[in-house]
Length: 171
Length: 171
Image (tube, rainbow over the protein chains, first blue to last red):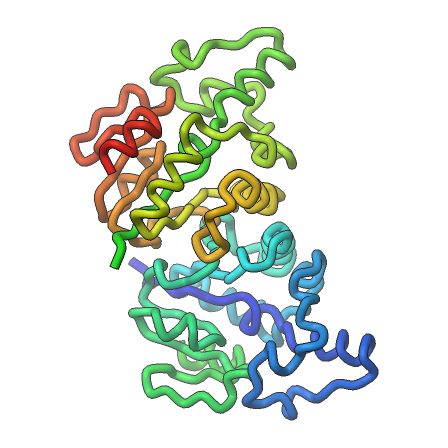
């Protein structure tokens, strides 16, 4: 039986920084680079425009993370993949997220999707996520996907992966 | 710490038989009573109109199961309730289900919701569900909520509950 891995969406499959930076620049006339945002929580990095996460269309139009299509295909062949996304916090985004997965990752079927509020009740062998709040309550092997907000986090129970090419080397 | 109970939506909180029977009668000119449907699988009971489940609005407009608002309030005070709904099979229904919960059960917050394809990866102390496919893979205490499709099912690992008044007596 294949081992099971939970794969996060935002910050792992979906690149949420690019549209947030773009929105901040367009609306407010300024923005920082991803490097400038290293070590800063997402809500603190974009306090003036973070409400865009609640707007219909944001998740539907998010760009795919570099290398994630090839990488997820690789994981999907080797492991029992379940996509787990914190989504119920954002009313009206669930259909967007479902449709986004179907468009960009059509090899993932509906049985492999979970949209939830918290991830603590979901069990598997491995978890790939960018948020320590999700990894910290997971009982299996923990992989933290590098994103600016988690750049400074060091935790010996997390294995850090910096991009999808690295995931394909390690996993 | 409160014990955790997973509560299903369709056939437990939402009454899906009433709108299916109504749709069949309206579109096809015939229908059966819920009693006539005892022991028949849902897809076999409504083969000619079951595609309505895929239509936007079906889940948004489903009636609330008798006694479920009071009953779920009772469970929510006593236990750690998580609503778990098989939903990803029906594209476009996720926002409907989320909105339906918010309207009818506003005391359930977004952290208490899971919309998934299969329920086998979600763990808790108890599960209340009408479908044996969900109960059979659950490791905790299993409560089967009587619906016509499960009427004939006897399984000594399930405790049968016939309505929400019974749930409030037992749990």
